[in-house]
Length: 200
Image (cartoon, rainbow, N blue to C red; front, side, top):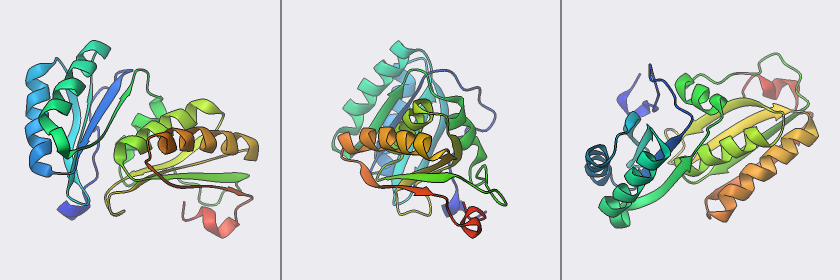
């Protein structure tokens, strides 16, 4: 795999119920910020890496107090280079599973789907947040969570299920991204063409 195509992964790490992320527009600022939060709080890095287009993201876990302390310190150090951040006290396990899969979506090839929903955001953090909210909103199956690389810095989450569930989930996740001014686009497709499912 080309180094520039690298996607963050949580390979081998044990995911705790709470996660936090900081995202900077500068790689150098992101590395400096990551060092600072490691000195500041008792946290475990899940990944810390550059993503397109020259941004830096760090995902970490620990106690809620430790995460909040790290977020405060990271914000101070990153200053104007901070793009986005998140704190999820109890993350849906499927979000973590999707991050582990890297470039390997859950897949729907050969399946006849009732509906497909997609939420597209302008930052990594807002997409992970939207995915977590969407998966908790209704009974849907996560298809893919793709972050930043190969997308010009944008990210998206796709899901499937019954039309009403997909619509409810997409609306909930999209509202979260929209409230932070991070929503690029969202869509629900009822009864998608069978040929489309092979490419989801």
